[in-house]
Image 1 (cartoon, rainbow, N blue to C red):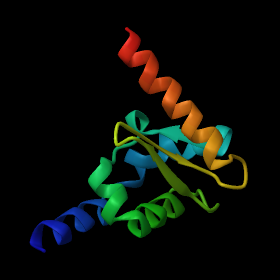
Image 2: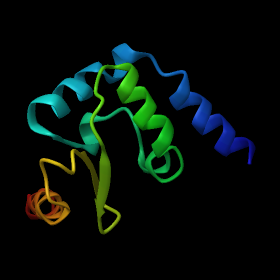
Image 3: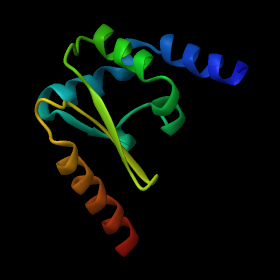
Image 4: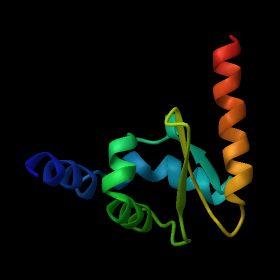
Length: 101
């Protein structure tokens, strides 16, 4: 339980500057992959409300959603601009291209 509280505190106290580039990318494209975010899978699984609040502090006030592909890749996206299936296809292509190379 202490680890969970520490994880949430880490997100809640993260600086807006650290998330600003991701918020800008979401504003432009509505989709951002895990490698472009300062969060790991544990954050998404336990702290999504805190992550949304952090994006709001950075000026991104639209709805957000997260999808994962086979536990290997995650993406955060604007559900008004992207269909979850399309995001999963992007993630699948990313994972398969990494495996192929």
